[in-house]
Length: 238
Image (cartoon, rainbow, N blue to C red):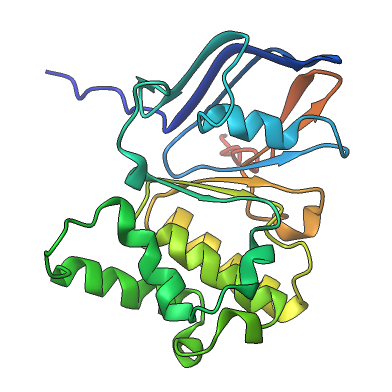
């Protein structure tokens, strides 16, 4: 028997959404495949964040359907398969918690009362801390860190359950050049080595240039998709 077709981590099918002032998105369809890096761009107020909130079930569409891993988002329950870092997440940095406590809190969705942490979970914690360059900051308070370090800690939190889909909303806002470099390397590893699907919402093309396989431009209630993958090289004959 032929192998079953792979299930897309995220699909929006003819989705429309509006507030009182009118439609923000109209008849939008988009799919994100496993191991694909998709950048979502557009001017402020164009609907970039709205598009992702619809994809994550944080907003309900007025029309159309949203699916996560082939399942309608309204009935989806396997949230450990989805990592999400919302815009301005680092604003919560005033909380008196350490980097390690922030990362560990990401396991709450899968934790069972009175159960010891599994060796697999411990190994995953070590992996994401190393991947995001946080080894020397584990005991540091989040409030003591730079904006870039805070953002990396929050991304590590989203990764600790080994999700298959990661959604980042403006992850480089207020982030220094060094943190951007670490983040780029981490995202490249997640896509190319771990096969994770990444949706990267940003107005800053430097953050995803060379990483994104497709760029989705949101404007005027619709989207335009631009393929960033290099064209296949032709083989000379003769």
